[in-house]
Amino acid sequence: MAKPVRGLRFQPSGGSRAAQIPVGKKQRLTIERLANDGRGIAFLEGRTWFVVGALAGEEVEARVLGAHGKVVEARTERVFSASDLRRPAPCAHAGRCGGCSVQHLPHDEQLALKQRMLAEQLSRVAGVEPEEWAPPLSGPEFGYRRRARVAVRWDAKAKKLEVGFRAAGSQDIVAIDECPVLVQPLQPIMSRLPAMLQRLSKPQALGHVELFSGSAIAVLLRHMAPLSAADLEILQAFCAFHEAQLWLHGEGEPQPVDPDEALGYRLEPWNLQLAYRPGDFVQVNAGVNEAMVAQALECLAPQADERVLDLFCGLGNFALPLAQKVREVVAVEGVATMVARAAENAASNNLHNTRFFQADLSQPLSDAEWAREGFSAVLLDPPRDGAFEVVRKLASLGAKRLVYVSCNPATLARDTVELVRQGYRLKRAGILDMFPQTAHVEAMALFEAS
Image (cartoon, rainbow, N blue to C red; front, side):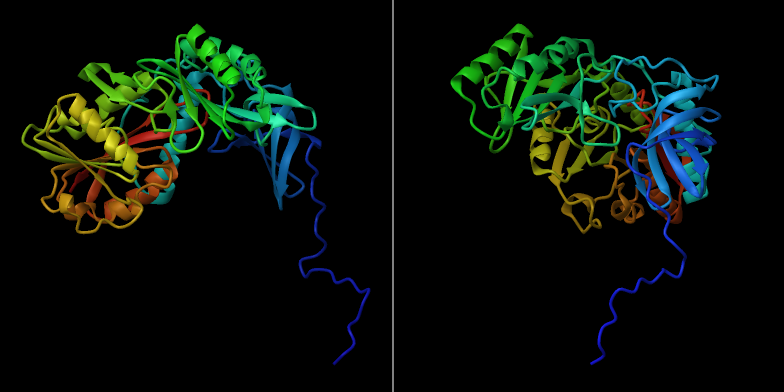
């Protein structure tokens, strides 16, 4: 056996490896253009920089958040030469809180950015453009968010409780005393929440807090150890002062302290009340949600004698308004508790032409009993992963019209390729501005069988 050679260093065939850029380093950059997520793009010494808070044409000083090979992620620290589009950030926490990454852009420019993102994905990935572009569906750019998750963490070294939102590009928590995108009923709760939590006896056992404003206001506390009677009294007094329900999430599912209290939200145009529990999925923008449902119904054009399929139905946000217009709605959801809640929502609203089923919609549609009779129209509202396995079988259901509500233009474009292959054409598409001040894009697309 040959004796190993020690002490020799071999250079990789590609040449010497460039030194990695340390986190925290500041660098002056000229921003060339905007990325699809609203970050500025700069190029320097063979590396591509993605800079939060920068606009095309600007010269900025950026602080490195992380580096991976030739890609550097950074945030804007100073602007030496500002774009004509730049506006003063409306929030005092801009640049530190990771929540609203494009608030330095006027709202109309935010909408234009999101429209370009959708159009580019459909063109580049699917090679299509809709026959008609729908105008952006939007509402107020501030005071729209009816649900928020507040991060809570005990800093053992500093012996203090951190309460706020996650920082941009890290797990740090930024203390927040006011959040311009929250609905007004949640603002005073948000401002007083940190002081109240700091009074509790076991801050190290606290998890996140969830706030919700619907038919009632609710405060949910996640805790990893039983609460003392004194702590419970503090929490109840806080919620009583703010006229809010108190929900606790220890072991098992979240539970209200007062089991007789109801929580939910209304779909006013259809005179519907939907029950909701903290942890359920719900659209955070109530105004845009109602406009979205109305637009989906307009696009789908449901007829009184039709049978319609609603995939990824959640609490019945689309299924219940649809049920008021058609012979039958079949609604399918992957989470069993949501299926049960949706069925209860239909019954409580006296809608008896709906049937709800649980199925794993990340898998191909099997010969399920609910699919055998076929459908005139289909509505689907999948998560960010899209619905590729589902759309592969949609043509076999006989649907002539399909409305696809998407929270990720990339997977919408991917699934569009499959729908076009099955003989559908993209009739109409447009953005839904569910999250103003962010680069997050929601969209709605109408497909019709050729």
